Length: 263
Image 1: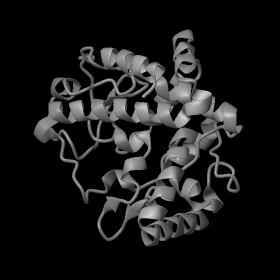
Image 2 (image 1 turned 90 degrees about the vertical axis):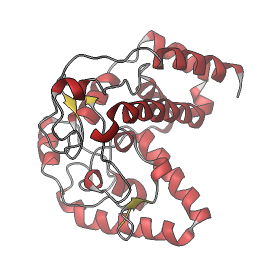
Image 3 (image 1 turned 60 degrees about the vertical axis):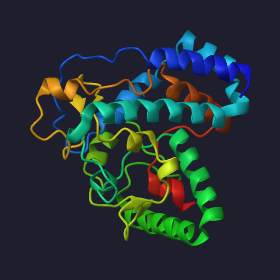
Image 4 (image 1 turned 30 degrees about the vertical axis):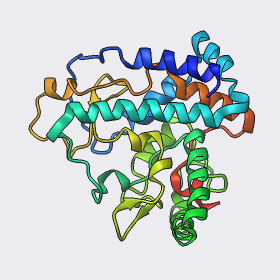
């Protein structure tokens, strides 16, 4: 790892080790909360601060988006491991539980990049599994394209209030193409989107509420839920990397897993 990356890791570790917020909240009333992972991140993305631009310069993202995304994943996974430790028996997530794998959700271009790389790696490691994932994705696109709340050719979601309303009722029973229907596990687990990585423990919504999986924290009080909250991206690294990626590729906007993996 070069010195810039080491400097960044030092700063990330310092901020990640701060005490998390303990403001009491309540569970979001939405069963499969979108505001915790999409509207909140969309709001953060609207402005890249000077501090983030300093990070971009230090990391030279134009030549190292993969490295920066790897560091982001380390930070998020570390935060979620901390949340899992705090949650204890309240957290019932386990292999074979597919509650959060049913129904499409918006993913960023950074998520899409990671998923495509993960599928390519799966193609080397297990070509048969990779073919099955891509075929499930293509079949999903065929089913979903007619009512897709966006461009059915590019797979980009429309970014307006009407589209958000349409998406809320869109294909809620559709399984994720990366989900192996036989094992109930994710074939692209290591490359999964940030939304998937942060499902389960409490995550702060744009509204200020705490969102967590409806199967977890059964019987827990608001204070007990709030005590398990952690900051998943305290330096707002994700929107900074995303801005650089979209500027580089020229492809902007959110999509869904099916469209990402079908091409």
